[in-house]
Length: 192
Image 1 (cartoon, helix red, strand yellow):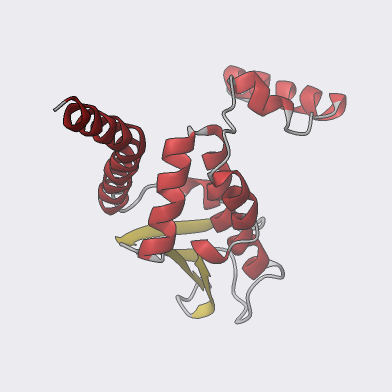
Image 2 (cartoon, rainbow, N blue to C red):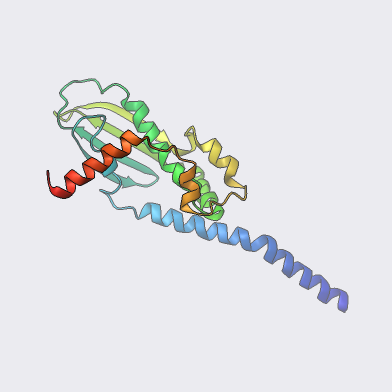
């Protein structure tokens, strides 16, 4: 009789130790999946304007798992895309994954799993001022250059302690850059 009770208790403990983290991961994956579907059109495109020193208007369409972004270069008449456009857009897409480094291991693992399972993809359509598509770029998130780094820390216990710890790993701006930024801020405050 005591053996059965001990065996049942051990099974419950094992289920709690191994099953609960898996349950939490699945719940987090569902939450991320739902939030990706609920991203409204029109968000996240402000960071693309201006586009490679050209005035642009961007529109975001959520067709999960494909996020489509139309970028119209208002001051660009040529029929070939500006140099470096493709590399810039791929870097921009993959750069969104860097934000996962500052999240908890649970969120980071769930987000990587969702990106892989759902095959999340960004599609960009660059158009000149006449509305002609001059470049189409597609980037699957599980094919980004930095995905291997995130997979390496996926199962690790890497947990950034504070925002300062994360910022400590970022390159520090030089004094001239800080002075220029401060001058721009003062000009904006004064309305010049």
